[in-house]
Length: 137
Image 1 (cartoon, helix red, strand yellow):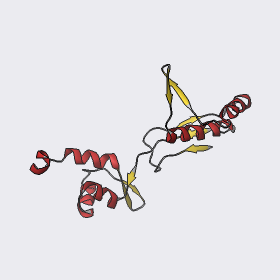
Image 2 (tube, one colour):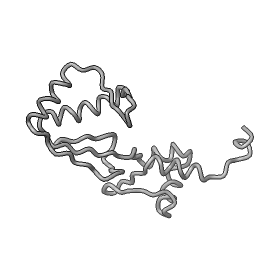
Image 3 (cartoon, rainbow, N blue to C red):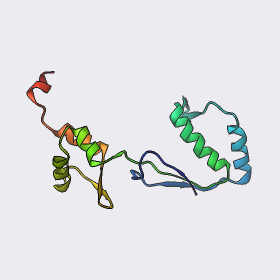
């Protein structure tokens, strides 16, 4: 089974598996993709030209289907180390560990290493009172 992965292996949505195409469908798709520099999708009847990064991901997925593979696509959250999260939050590594120990900022463990979602750090920052100098800026 082929995969479609982004950044870090921490799923944010349930993976979706698409079964292999029939040989006839796969062949037609392979021919359509041959030497194609443009991928345009239609959303509710409106044409949308995909940006380069999205185009590459979609073409990779379509090529895998065109090769006759079953494909599973998983989206993942950007996960930070505690050092990265502390730097992003502008706090010490120790204070960040205390926040994760208290459950104030959620952390996931990979072995003995904590990983923290960037969105959780950003959410925590939004909830912090602003200093007078920041409020006036």
